[in-house]
Length: 134
Image 1: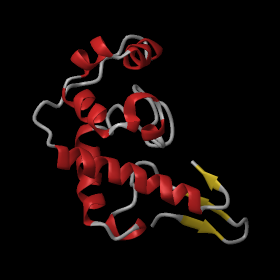
Image 2: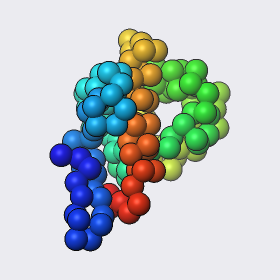
Image 3: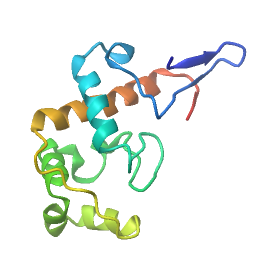
Image 4: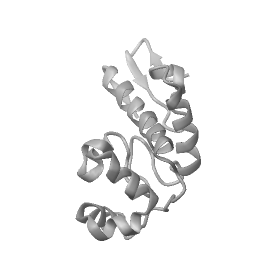
């Protein structure tokens, strides 16, 4: 399971396609819900640790407007409208070749919070590892 430890090399690996479940990081049930939502809505374009069709999501709440959770809610529900008022979001779109994130207008704040908890749980896991191979 994750994290896998190679005791001979004292390294840890994390499988980005099978991220931790609720008990693997903090025991928070929200993380398990966030994992299911992430896999269903986000994983086709985003990886946690590396750029893909969209940017890597590890540490995303420390970048641009995402330090404000209300901006995250607005972005996820209507990226096109958010881009009109936010230069960072426009620059991000341009950086990824004009690719526009899919809108999820019916997602709730609680569901977005669960996805954030899941992504942040991975961030906590990464910080706790002395050497990580992703």
